[in-house]
Image (tube, rainbow, N blue to C red; front, side):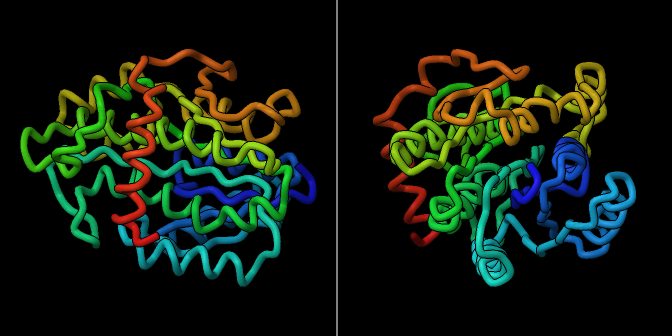
Length: 274
């Protein structure tokens, strides 16, 4: 990974932080995004101290704001002339419905539309830097079908249902993007890290939080699959797959529905203004 530039969203804690740590130890230049400047600086200093790699940079990005995402990408493009790995790691679970800065249900906005927009804004530099990789974090909790008639879950909101819906959207996005990137030298895959003891459960009710902790892995264990996808030569040419425990896995039939993926893509473009 020496000489490689890696951009990771949501890397101030949990899986993102452990992924950043491991890739920094392998010699990569790490750029992390955060919406909290102090947390970002603390993470930067901790990573430098623990990895002895001082090539750590921090960019401000509020993933619930399309304007902020665009500003973050513009700043990245000002600072860097290449990007070898983009890891869309940040994710949230909302147990009460609320809306993003753009008036969109926040889980869908942060977990799906933010990676959709950021990836599209950085595609040109990824292509220019090829061979390069995109890793989208998803979950084994992806489920159901895309709710085209109510993407904002104005009716029947359930935190885990909406979370699973956003992760299904990420898988469909990944599969369609992989088709579009054939021949470019850019690969894109999904990583399911398993349920980890991270800030995802911070807003859960006491019962849900307890279940999270019982099932959760340490973040360093959950980070193994994204680390593998970012760095291993074994997956250099593999694209459009869903990985769990460092192996490609088959997912439910809804994740292979390319008609739904294309429809979602067009709707997403309108949401984010592409």
